Amino acid sequence: MKLLFLIPIFIFSLLSCQAQIPDKEGQIAAAVQAAPPEKQEGATVYGFDEEGNKVLLREGTNEQICIADDPNKEGFSVACYHKDLHPFMKRGDELRAEGKRPDAIFEIREEEAKSGKLKMPDNPTTLHVLSGKEGKYNPETGKVENANLRYVVYIPFATAESTGLPIRPLVPGGAWIMDPGTHRAHIMITPPND
Image (cartoon, rainbow, N blue to C red; front, side):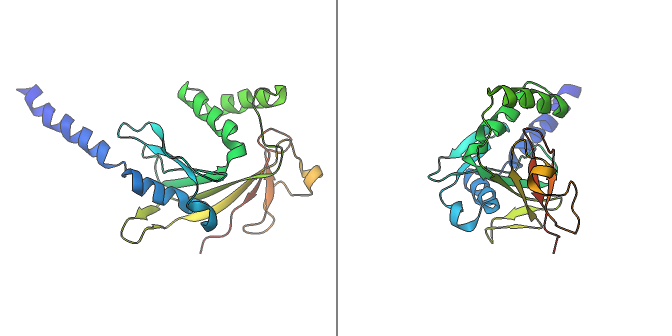
């Protein structure tokens, strides 16, 4: 009797999980909004299938790769980055799938980048992130709402001394260098929220 009561709850739970993942078109439409407008139509897009696995949703024609909002994480966050960052991003996904913690992922990629096993970009390369705790994609307007853009420009192994950048923002939204001297050195630019 108790088991019969639990079966409808289990089925409802499964259906609820599936309902959280937007359809392919919605994921693509939301994800590309992190890219510059002129790059959105030709961007490659990765998103999530019904089981929550990351999958290729659309093969692109330009250098932008976009990632849809992860339904397994709180808040809203989509990102687009230059294709030269893909080996770095893909390696992070692989290590997370293996159950590695963030500090271990950093150390492994640092070692692999220094040895040449992990190819990092030769030139400054940008990641655009559109995120917000209350952010969401509105299918009626075709726009992401309650989210803000931030820019991350990867400059592997650069330092404050080699760039002249401070190690923290000096003014709201000011550019600064994070993780200086490492494979993950990057310029952070977080414009103040409207």
